[in-house]
Structures are given as structure tokens and as C-alpha cells.
Length: 291
Length: 244
Image (tube, rainbow over the protein chains, first blue to last red):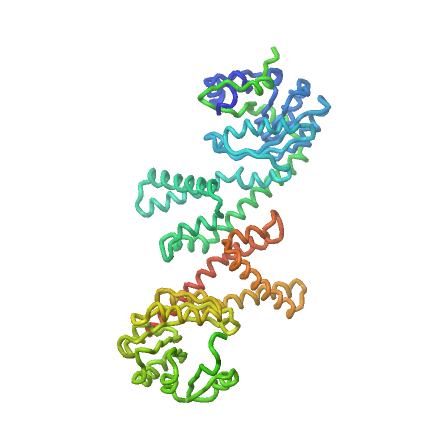
């Protein structure tokens, strides 16, 4: 998102046929099939692989990790301590940051949180924050809140997509063409979210502001309340959070199958921007190429 | 305490209800016409089906100086004005039970003959019993659903709160008193801070704490919708009864 020049980014994947690979290449990102090369040429490493693969990646790149490296894991349910433990066999004080983001980073409206590990400095956290803030909202949290964040904003877009699908159905039922219904529904949610983010007011107050006495909206809201709309949403966030914890628990116990290592991986950095800009001097030092 | 008791006269067919008035130092009578002769501001507090008869009775004695305030549920200003001399200053009042402890919620609507002066007089006088607001007549039935009957909803909620506490091991009497005080306190905060109840609710909910767990239960039970249903049902019933 314009924060970092593409040529300062290196992505690695064993499978060069993936559409993401060509997409990254087109942006001018350096590409390699070797995870080790990636580590050598970078200072910040984003591990964007599925959780079961993390231990393998760490084994593979561990020997090349140096004190300067900041290892950022976006893997759901993989704790900082598990990564630190794995890396400590190679590097005494590995800098680890754990983050949880969501899919709308693709349109630069992501919601990202991060928690810093034992050896990560304040500046390391701030660097990550700066990078992720270019694709949306980013803030630091205590690691034990990450499951709740998953339940809320990690899964949140899915709740929204479901709602939008249904809203569009409602529109179609009442006579709107599907495309228009989808467009209007999405815009309504976008606008409402924007109003809330820009307002000091409580969402309850904003809701009241839309409900004229005896009008259409209050009648509709009554239906939502009758259906337990609010409790459904609370249930959803809770279920997602609890499941995240369960998966983490399972992951802590499981032996990783060798078959998993054969799965297609993409080790990539998440910054996408069609407009490239040169990183400022302070960032250049962290991304200098070693060779 | 705005009007001295000696300036108040109450009339009823039997002594049954008049004792309480007498005890406060008010004058009493069995003659409705006497009230009209002695007073400017007259409150009609009979049951709705009795009212037309009373209006017929007092009509000859009603003059342009009188201010007639009806508390009869469901009897419209139109009806009142029809049964009284043309141009009579008529207002319609809907109180609720806690007026008796000076914490009432009252609304009133003015008829065509009543002006700002009469409205101000009534509002000023009744504010000593609680909240008193002028409204369009169409809001009166809604007030019934919200606050007239609403008091009963609160009693129900209070009872349920206390029962929850009893289930968890607290004696009933204590639970009841605490439940009532909780409602009182919450209401007081709403009125004094003027903040949106959603915000006040959020302020109490510490992350992962007891309150949010409890609220989730309430939401699961669709409490909000149920309450909306209750207000709607009472309002609709008030409208239906008015037409009878």
C-alpha cells in the first residue's frame, strides 16, 4: 500500500504456478522458491502459511535466523511461545510478533492486531504496526485477546457477507434486481460502518437517529429483535473465539504429519500496492539486501 | 404542596373514597355541581363509562372560566367537547400510578378551547407529582402502553430479578428491596446523566465480565422484542377500548 517499495519485498513459494505468484511478480516483488533465500535477503519475515506448516517452516529457516530478524506469524492459533521455543534452538533471542488480520486487507480496510514476543522491542512492534496500518486499522493487544479478535473481526467479514446476501434477498423479494440489491446493501453497511467510526456517538444512538416514530425502520428492527438478532451475533463471535481456542489446543498436542509438508505453501509479504513508492530512509536500513 | 388543601374540594357519590381527601384537609361533598361552583380547575376522575353521565349533569354549571381536565382513559377530547358547552377549556390527562409517590409520568393534551395558559397551569401544578409533558392526543394511548401499563412490566421484571437472587441463595425480602433499588438507581442515572441507555449499559460491561454474560442471556431470550411487543399490545388495546 505504498509503504514499501516492491523491490524490497521478497516472496517465496515452492509452487510457482499459483496465481498469487504471478500477481506478486507483476508488482515487482522479488521471487524465489527458496525460503532460505528469503530469510537471507530480508529483515522482516511474514510467515503466511497454514498453522500445521509453521513448525516445518521454522525448522527450515531456523538456522538462518539472526538477531536482526523479526518473525511475524499470522497463523491462527499458533502462540508466540511455541514459535519462540522452536526458534530458540537456533537463535537465543528470536524476535517474534504474532498478528491476526482479516481478508479486507485486500482492499486496505483490514483489521489487524498484533502481540509482541519476549524479545521484540517496541520499535519492532511499531514497524509492524506501520506496515499493517497501510492496509487498514492496526493496533497492539495482549496475546490472550487474539482469540476474541478472531471471533470478532477475523470471522467478521463472513458474518457481513452472510448478512449482505440476505439483505440482497430481501431487496430482490421486494422487487429489486439482484445486482442493484447487492450494491445497495453493501453500500448501506459500508456507510453505516463509516458513520460509526467517524462518530463519537454510541451505535445505539445512531440507530435511534434513523428510527422515526412509527416509521419503517423501527418496524423492521422489531423483527430483528424478535429473531434474536443481537444474540445470534454474540453467539457467533463467541463460537468463533471458542473454536479458535480449541484448534490451538489441538495444535499444541498434535504430531505434525509429514504429508503436510508437501502441501503448497506461499511464504509471502502482505503489502500490495499498484503504486510503488520509495521507502523512507528509516525503513531502508531494515530492508537492506545482504548480498 | 402547590395548592393548600382547603382550596381543594372533592366529590364522590359515597364516602368510601372521600375519607382520604378529608384526612388531608380537603373539603368534600356528594354534589358534583358544588365542585363546579367552588372551583375553576376541575379534574374528572371517574370510570370512563360513568363519565358521559357526569358530563350531562355538570354541563349547565360549566362556564368559560372553567378548566376541565379529564383523566378518563379512552374518552377523547372530541367526545368531551361534544358533551360540554362549546368553547369550554378541556384538557385530557393520562397519569400513571407512581404519581402517588410523586414520581409519576404524566402526559396531557389540550382541546381546542384550551390555550397556553391552561397548559402551563396544568403542567406547573402536576410537575409536583413527577414528569408532566404536553403531547398531541395521539400519543396518549402510547403513553398508556409505555408508562401507564409500563409500571406493571417493571414490577414483573423486579419480581424476576428477585427470584433469580433467591435461586442463588438470597432471602426474598432482601432480594426484593435490592431489586427495587437497582431499578430506581438505574432510572435515576438515566434521568440525571441524559446519556443514551445503550451507552450506560456499555459502561457497566467490563470485558468478559459478569454483566456481559448476563446480557447475553437476556438477548438470547429476545427480551427487547418481548418488551416492544408488550408496549405495542397495551397501546393497541387502549386504542381498541377507546373505540368501544
